[in-house]
Amino acid sequence: MSNLYIGVMSGTSLDGVDVALCKIEKDSTELLHTYEHPFDPELKKEILSLINKETTLKQLGELDVKLALLFAKAINTLLQEASLSPKDIQAIGLHGQTLWHEPRSAYPFSMQLGNANVVVTQTDITTVADFRGADIAHGGEGAPFAPAFHKEIFASSDKTVGVVNIGGMSNISYLAKETLGWDIGCGNVLLDLFMQKSQNQPYDKDGAFAKSGSVNMQLLQAMLKESYFQKAPPKSTGREYFNEKWLDSYLEKFQGVQDADIQRTLLELTATTIAKEANRLQLQELILCGGGAKNSFLVERIQDLCLTHVSKSDDHGINSDFLEAMIFAWFAYKRINKQRVDLRSITGSKQETLLGALYEA
Image 1 (cartoon, rainbow, N blue to C red):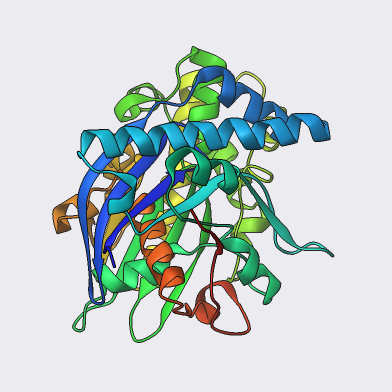
Image 2 (image 1 turned 120 degrees about the horizontal axis):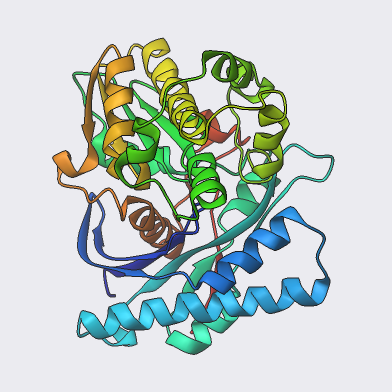
């Protein structure tokens, strides 16, 4: 049996498709090769339109296939770069593209698109998908899943460690005697959204635009009072909550604030909510990963606000850009080997769960 697995992740930032080739043994996960596939601007626009506006079943069905073709192309490109064939790979762990996450409605669900049948057909590799459904069916939030993997690679016997992934949303893993985790709130999502809206730029490189402004304390304090930030874990969130409508509801009350000051305040919101959790948990080390870890000014502000040492996963030999893709390679390994994952203390699931549906080649 091959011990090579591929993880595929496209997060809420919609900045690219991350593909990670991993060698996974019982007690180790080694990253062998990576590839980032660009996200087609028109496809990104279509996804955001579906999230923010009314849609049709036809649009939804077609997007499911479009995303699958995108994911398959990314996987096949990695295989070509790594000089591997489909038969060398045991399975693909396909997260899919989250469109809507609603784990606490009367009929809870989490919707990720990217038709696994199409991925299998296009790659000829067994694929594991729909990871979040089983957790939600067992009473869990369906997110975050990262803490289970972070425990495997970052947990320390002599200190309390926290790992924060800053993607579109930010989530934290608390690694001590007990493993906990939850979504803190907005990560890059509002920063990117406002840059696109005000500066026609996809993101604020190194937080340069934010750095040129000043924090509007009244706006910051108003946003920090948002009910999600007061909610106790387990909890999870996404673009269905933190979006343009959410941001506009605050900016309407603060007319006349300069664009650079808004950007600076949004960066401070992300840094403050992360540091607040790290300090509350009395962490002895905070490890950052995800796209936000590349924003040097955001990292600087988190360090300034934290009472503990802040590092990046890269400092620990783990590529921060591909950590989430590695997670789903590992979850595919778990599913192929019929190993249940214990997320009870993280998502609130009522039992250890076999995560993911199997689509065989």
